[in-house]
View 1: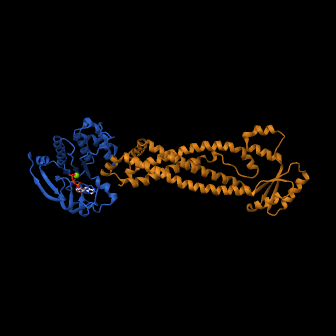
View 2: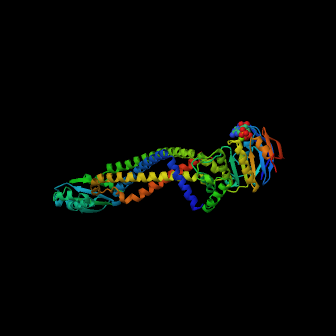
View 3: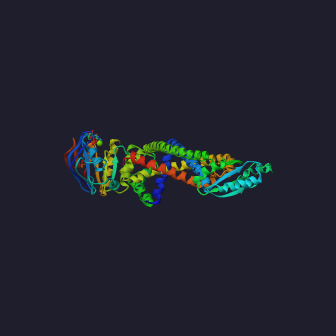
Length: 227
Length: 301
Ligand SMILES: Nc1ncnc2c1ncn2[C@@H]1O[C@H](COP(=O)(O)OP(=O)(O)OP(=O)(O)O)[C@@H](O)[C@H]1O
Ligand SMILES: [Mg+2]
């Protein structure tokens, strides 16, 4: 669960990136966050990852009050979520398998579990054949599927995706969102920032529009091909 | 932390060194030179101490009489020496005995001594024990004024030169330690910075997926420690070789120093393990400390 209560963020440069934003996303939701460039979408994502702190207001994610979260508790908190970024953020010197296994090593998961879990998530994103490839040998869509597998691997309650389709072909974007939808169907909450209005119209669901640091629209709309 | 985790982090540390071979090598060299210079000062200090210590251990002054002094005169000298205030005992030390001792203390030169045959170059003498080593210098000055005395072993100048030398070496050692520690730290800082830079993507992702600070820092800690450890090993090897060859040269003088009542230069065998231990521990400690301090600074987790 994600909850923002009267949250404002002012960068040290003086820019007011978010202005008194209140928002609640329940467990199991799928929400799109849209808005023009510079509106404050990434700022909100950084807030949820505790990369930055709110200037005022209360931020709660997965039961952690991020305002009061002690520095040494940050790792524990971050293990409850997954992330997907526009620029994939894969480690170029590691294979697909290693990139994903890395997450589990970092949290000191048992070797046996790693050996079972990693091939499983790779199969979920349909990249069994690319297990031993390096990121440079993959297409944009494939890279992002690796990133999604990585976000999934520690079974997080919430996946935060900041423009996951921003660097890949529009046709492939649908595939990526389908994948995220599938993950959402299994109970994971998903918050996805996007610029692509076609995508949002196509899939529908909860749409949150941020403009100039404020939420100007927050409603559930029907998708074009909603069954 | 599981064993597999420890192995993983150690492997990462070794990989860090490999990725930054040039930087790691530069750090290795600087640390090696630092350790060696510090080690050399310490060894010098220890040896001077051992030499000076030889005097106070024995509480003894070596006195030699002139060649061709008659036996009657020698007996008289013995009585005069015993009469000096502060002298507890006087032992006659024949030139034959002194020669035997000298031969035993320098087994490598047996042949040369044997070739001397009956031509014993040493004079007859006495070993004068004093109650209080503090008075040794005054007593030797007094003995030196006696007729037929050829040489009095403890010379005030010599001891005070050694003392002064020890003092200077201590000062130099302190300066060397301060300067080299600073230089080493700067090198380690830069190497660590380069390592962190080459791993910046991983570090960022590690932070996002909830790695603890300790986990992120450990590979750098391992990297610093291994570099320091290798430097320590290198410094030890070089010190060993240098010390042994210097010892070989100085041994010729050792016998003489023994005869005049001074202590020995320590053979490397007796201090090898201390030197090795000190080098390895100091190297690993400085390396690890440097990287820990600087990962703290450069990785803002
Ligand atoms: N680190 C920062 N320091 C100062 N100002 C910042 C910083 N990051 C973002 N900003 C400013 O805050 C505002 C919101 O930025 P943000 O990145 O949240 O926008 P966005 O909605 O994600 O835009 P885009 O769609 O282009 O990614 C912008 O005016 C931006 O210039
Ligand atoms: Mg953005």
